[in-house]
Image (tube, rainbow, N blue to C red):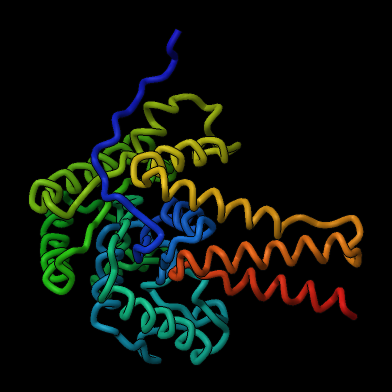
Length: 331
């Protein structure tokens, strides 16, 4: 008996380790991005921190494209921390200079990356936005400011399509080979109410569908939302809060993404990188033994082989860890 409704995955760009990637959007983008990093893909993940609504994501991309430099006036002080209304709380800091340094460093790096980016993966979380009453600016993060400071509203399909039509035209003009993959986060925003959450997700899906038709050669869609809502239609695949996907569900969605976007050679290289990471995570029973010394030397040889064959892979952290452990053996 088949108890699953299998989702057909549409055609997606083929990704290899030589591609430069950026993931931006909701916490689902962060989850996928961290898995790509562990698999040794060159990718930047959420340079502004987690962002949920399409217009804040678009604004962040425009700021990165222009190389915006944040100044004191772009931040505000609340609860003893300096915040940016465009950034996640991870960028907040007790001093202005500390916050500005972190924000501007990430933007500077992202500005250079976007010039030669191969694939941009955008995950929309919600069509609901918070608009400042005084400035009418849509914020990326409220930073727990009083709700009376904002007007909460749901974006229309037209607002999203108009903004992204303009944005994508700009990005493609600068980088004609760029591929854009949209996803809708499968995480439900239950605070909005289940009905309003469905209206929000539907708005996002309709907007992406229109963008696919407007940019058929470079805009794609990965159905993460449908995979969880339909193929994994069971609360066994949810965390204890019954809202977020369980670790098993995330792994299954990840595997469908890998199977769709990565060819056999890329998947094999991913396995080699994973095996290397697992070897480094091993904790020997006798750290000072000759056997452990040989084990670390074998890892170094494997890193050297992979680095020579795939010079675009970054093993700096692994090399440093091996050197540290080998030096400790000699003390």
